Length: 200
Image (cartoon, rainbow, N blue to C red; front, side):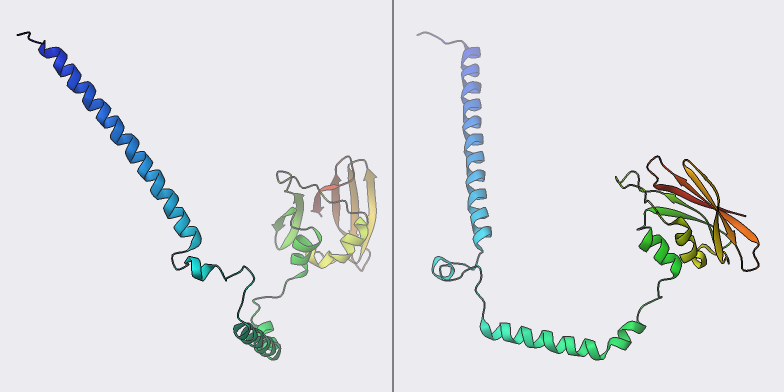
């Protein structure tokens, strides 16, 4: 009788066990993949859709009776809203001011506003990181006249005080022909306004 070494039989058992574990792992992964495919198909088609039921339903199918009901409901809603227009207008919190129209309308929200004592002290271009470019204000005097109330200064006239490359300064003159402040436009090399500073 030949006796096999005990260490060799233990090694053989460990190899067999490792192969069994690999086989179980491969079968587990395959079953998970198979279940995933079937679950995906079931979710895409819908649990209530069978072959007989799904064959006659198209993308653009609708029921005419419910469509007519929806149209009638929309018309009724539009009529009600038209009669309640005054109530809807009253529900607005606050009408936009001239300052709001300046900052968010004309300047498109591209400029940050610095206030001092209720007046605009400066407007500075802030959207450089977003890829935006500063605005080119062609008629600066007209711009200052139009938004004088928004700037918080009571001036009636605007005149050019100095005009240099990259900077234009305008005098703000009240109705008694007194200079009450200055507006300085800082521009880039293409004439676009980087900042507007107001001073006394």
